[in-house]
Length: 215
Image (tube, rainbow, N blue to C red; front, side, top):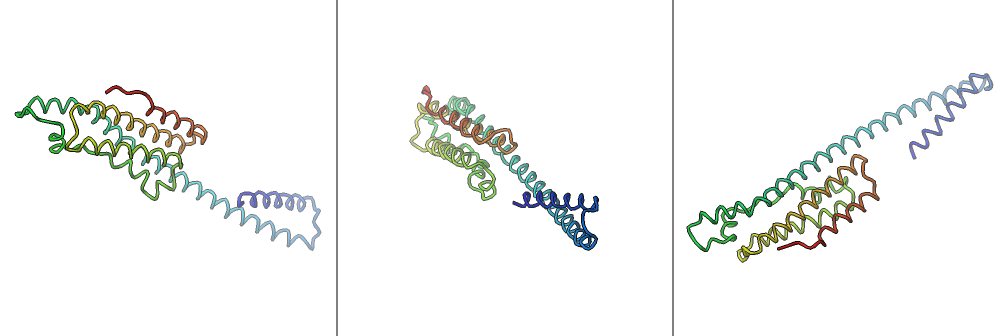
């Protein structure tokens, strides 16, 4: 609305200035025309300053959001690397164990894995909620909730060694989906991804869960 009003006033100012320059305004009306031109100039100047400030603030906020997204994605990538290494690490500990009944539950009680905390900020912080695409908040929230449930299951005392490879695969899928969702949001924040592209690409990512996975 402000931009529309400014455009109208600029057009009016140009018309008055043109008429004044062509001596089409009577002398008795020229002081009023000058006053109107001055007021239009002041209004347009103030409006331009406000718009530039708003643009600068918006750009700064987008950059801040982008940095938060990148850091969250890096946290998930570290977690995914830990997931991939976990079976090998556990096997090494089991091979060195003095007890023949050295189970994964005991290992995890002694060496609990770190769950990525930073991505949760994207779906819980008031700042992020006000900046991110609603679809990202929903899909990323669901994906992180799935990861949390799998993390909790793996850390239960009754978790069986035979289930490790299955859950490693499932957690790998969910963490990669979360990373891809964040990458899409980065594209959206920088204007490289449209609303339609966001929805379509997210649907493709969600279908990853439906693919068969070997135990």
